[in-house]
Amino acid sequence: MTDRATELRAQGRDIISLSVGEPDFDTPFHVVAAMKAALDSGQTRYTPVGGTAAMKRAAALHFERDLGIAIDVAQVTVSAGGKQAIFHALLATLDPGDEVVIPAPWWVSYPEIVRFAGGTVVPLPTRPETGFHFSAADLAAVVTPRTRWLLLNSPGNPTGAVFTAEDICAVAAVMEAHPELLVMSDDIYAPLTYTGAPHATLAALRPDLADRVLTVSGVSKSHAMTGLRIGVATGPEWLIRAMERLQSHSSGNPCSISQAGAVAAFEGPQDFLADWRERFRQRRDLVVSRINAIPGLSTPVPQGAFYCFVDASPLIGGMLADDGALALHLLEHGVAVVAASAFGGGHCGLAGFRISFAASEDQLNAAIDRIEKAVSAL
Image (tube, rainbow, N blue to C red; front, side):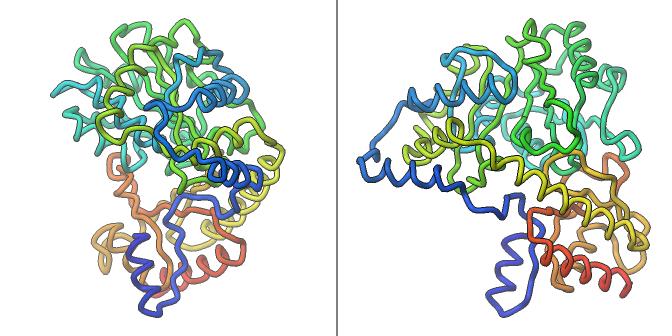
């Protein structure tokens, strides 16, 4: 959808894109300065496949300070974005027919990576009425002897759902009953929560289970470094080594200059995050209020990240066969969004779209004006 919006802009169309998940803020100055210094000092050579020593130390600092996971640098690997870490972890561990449980709605890449690795996707449907949470009983009902992984994402894309410590402890109880079950905790949006409660993650809450948990994080969302492609992961050493072996034969080391920027991001000032978080919260409240005032549309209040998952089920049928047609209808009215079906919304009985509110207030208001007009035209 983002590519299509770019094409239409090139043709002279006025398109507001709310389809891409990246902060609209500038990369912090100290991060840019660190990358410039790395260039000036000639840091353009190969680095170790899994990241420089400085990068691994900075990542270990981040995991302990920001997520509460105390680790050794030997348990850290660095990749070209969090997506690559997820890809390598699944490719290293899945045999054909192994099952991976994914709460739905899910990030679009999760099921595709599982299928590429030969695994079988097992949806775990959630609903807006429960805040897109699931219970221990819900999870236990879909775990089988073939289940290899559970993928967690909190705060979540596309729903903004945030798992509490109680939610995480429910997962731990299922893990205790199924000793072969591994858990991947994608915490890339951890700095962007609006609940006021500390971020809850499995490896921190249950260190006794940490040898079965891979925690993925990075700088893309928290430090507006999406294009610089640095992700970090921590888990048991056997898995980290396997991921690095795969990386050595796929992409090799992550970009040396980006690593220098990520070191500065993790080790440098973090005070700007409070301002960014508050600005995102204000945008969230704006979007939720305006969307819920449009007949036929509704969205719960996301507790984290920068997305609203809009239910448009009352609009489907007649002129619109599905939410893909709705997304195209909105695009014709000058707004790019992503259909809920791309996120597995159908498994939850939801049809609608995801809005990214990582845009200025003026853009958000203009976009929702267009959405309101497009809906009224139906």
